[in-house]
Length: 204
Ligand SMILES: N[C@@H](CCC(=O)N[C@@H](CS)C(=O)NCC(=O)O)C(=O)O
Image (tube, rainbow, N blue to C red):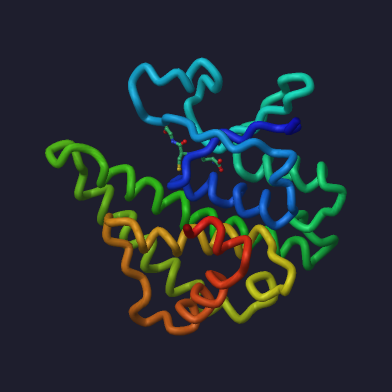
C-alpha cells in the first residue's frame, strides 16, 4: 500500500516539480498519483483540498496533508532519508536559496500570465499580460547571465534546477512565452536538463 497520495495535474508546473522529485527519489511505490480537477466549479476535489490547488500531499497513515511544492519536496526528501533537495549549509545554501527564489519569481509571474490568457478574451487584461511578459523577459536575460553558476549545474538534481526548468518549459504552452532569442546559454542548459531521466518523465 502506498504511504502518500499526491494530488496533481500534469500541466501544473508546481506539481511537475514534485512529480520529478518522486521519480528522482524512487518514491513511486510509496506515492500514489491522483489527478485532481482544478478550476472547475463544484469539483469534488474541493472536498479533499479546500484551496483547490495542486500539488497537495496526503499521508495515508494519519491523513496529515501538505500544500505547496516547496513543503512537499521537503517532506518527501525527509521521507526518503536523504536530503538531496535540501539546501547546503552556510553561504552556499544562501546562494542556492537566492537562486530558487529567483526561479520561483519567474515561475509565479508566468503562472499569472498563463492564467490571464486562459480567461475569456473580453476578460483578459493586456496590462497584466504585458507586465508579466516584460518581467519574464528581464528575468530570462538575468538567468542567461547566471546559468553557468553552481546551483544550476550541480550533477545531483536540485530544487533550483527543477524550478527553473518547469518555468522555462512553459514555452511549450500556447500563451506566448518565447524566451530563447538572445538566450543561447539558457537554451543549451534547458535542452540539457530535458535529457535527465526524472525530467524526461514529467515531459511526456
Ligand atoms: N505556491 C504553490 C502554487 C500552487 C498553484 O498555484 N497551483 C495551481 C496550478 S499551477 C493551482 O492549483 N491552481 C488551481 C486554482 O487556482 O484553483 C506551490 O508552490 O505549490
